Length: 346
Image (cartoon, rainbow, N blue to C red):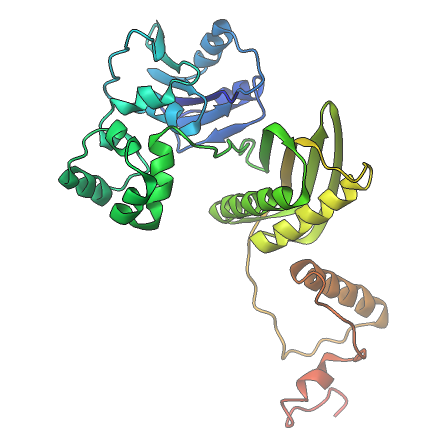
């Protein structure tokens, strides 16, 4: 079962705190300047380790821990928690000016049910007003509605809101710290046994990774993929000369890496987990090429420049590039649409 924690501090978190987080898990995802998600799935975390980590943060701190990002976030930031019923939906551990709200396994639905709609933070203010006008005040009221009713009220986002109200949030925690790397990791409760399912997961991963690269205004220059089968792990990686942040291209590379890995195994897949690492991030910059200044290029310099340009094109448009007749000089190409242009010897 997943074990996600959300740390919400009153003061900005510093690098010393994030470095201490890395001692517990590689999946550290900062959220703003004073909050962070940690994926502690599979880690035997003791309360003493939580207290030790909390000591690296300044000011009051509140921690939410649950099986999903949504429930952990709400547990950490909710102003007033619902009264715990006799079945115990959650436990509160307090020390100094720190507080840990731990939602017990399989109790997310009952924990969320008593909270007001405003606590369901993916809901926009206009959507909350619409639901309140319809007569719904609590998250539990929304969870009890059939999904098609929410689609009728809120549009196509209604299906997502229906799942979130019932505590269903499979969004993974991404390793965004340190800043020069992005880590995406999934562990499957049941074995993944077909290529179609794996391709769908790569589409979802590529979209999320591309979105993170756009937020950072960066491109990645190396992609690593690790597939796990029971206790055995196999890895493949690819270097990108020019870098990329395009989701379609990332998906294409991930599929190619997975095929390279799966050649080591038999025909069946049986994947139990995967890890994607984007590193060697570089800031995205734009430059205007100068097509009209004449600079003589030696023959020794011409071929490496051509190979480099072709490699960039192949990375950007994989499988679509074919080579035609080589043209010796750029001036000859420009003369095709600029007949008044003089060649250098003229």
